Length: 262
Image (tube, rainbow, N blue to C red; front, side, top):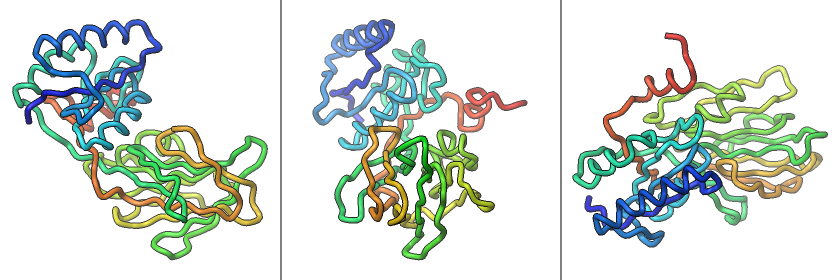
């Protein structure tokens, strides 16, 4: 793939990242590579995992591969660290890289509106700290359970190591094809996570007698769900393309980033 146009998504609240972006733009300009948000051949993320999630939205919308450069703290989603950026870009320009497809979720309300996508997860949660929310969950049209809880997460394999893991969900290889359903602090005896088929359709309804809820994709701004309202979550028909270099694989990254004992 020829790289002639690059989009940059950066966390510009930090001076060091702003300086890195200037150096990057200069490097690209020297090679006659245009920096633009219109039909890019490659999307670069400069920052931490939050920036990476925003960049994933951009990359998926224009169906371009995404390379994450870690300039944050954990940087679990990023492929390379800042000091490796220009070496990696040289390899990409010369075609020396691989593409790994990652599952993406599509979420919409029951009327087909308020659509959003998530690389990590879709979260439905209570709208206030003082009261729980009662969420009725159905899988493929069949009722599963009603959860009195802080919320419910539907995660991708990529997102299994994010909020879903903190809520007690399993660690899933990002190359797997499945959905992970995790109740968050459910006030009931049975509140185990579920691993679902990739083509399962998850419907989450706020109980008519419950308090209102909010839902969000990848920690974006929440959208209100009134009692009785429903959302539908399913696998997006088009995956996200992530650039992979010859760096650490899934298990090595898991050990180092999450501090697993050797």
